[in-house]
Image 1 (cartoon, rainbow, N blue to C red):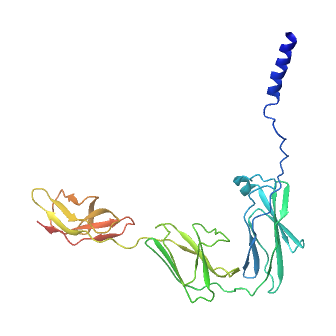
Image 2: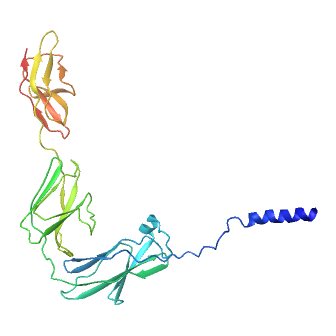
Image 3: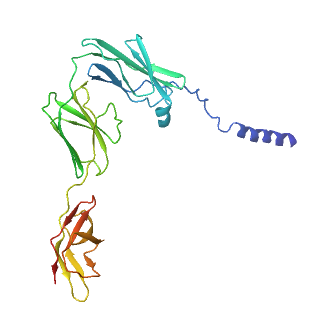
Length: 299
């Protein structure tokens, strides 16, 4: 009986010792990153520029965490199959200007810590006649909720517009591409400064940038005046009026002989000393623009 109990106990412990070990053991991790996604090409005036997306996975199929894709990956740039090699932590690379007719090839390999991945497929181009001039800017206008840029006659089929709320721009992707000479941006906030620059684009060919322009949209259009102001002098002296039809009016100022004596968000105002003189109501909008009413009529 004792021997039977020992055998049962051994089998019981064995069942715990083998729990979680079913199947073949996992292979060791391989932290070599895959090659970057498709490498793209631009010719900026005469200088080649390439850009790419970071690889999403290691060669073993495991996903590279997005934070590590941003912070832990660097890239080796191979030019003309080993003639020149550069390294960068950015996802783009701009080479020196090259003469027209020269062929140049690029490959990109990702590096994760000390693990260097394979090179991407090569991208090769022959340097073409460059776009040498930026588009001519005729006028820049900023108003209530808009920025408008007017260009001169187009010498190439499209203009790329770059926009930033600092003086740092995305070097690759434009904010908008236009095929006429008018750019209108309504995605702005009054009182905030924006920076713009532009260049000609013809497929992969890109021209030089204009200088950077800073603009600040602002509401400088005054509101409609209050209507029918009346000064009532029966027992108590007070002003009444009809509201301004403008939708952005914030409050009303009360003026006596040109001097402000108070303000209100309502449509009435009590006057302590009902003096003879001229009373007007000023509608004030959110930007601080003001429009005065006609003189109040006494009753």
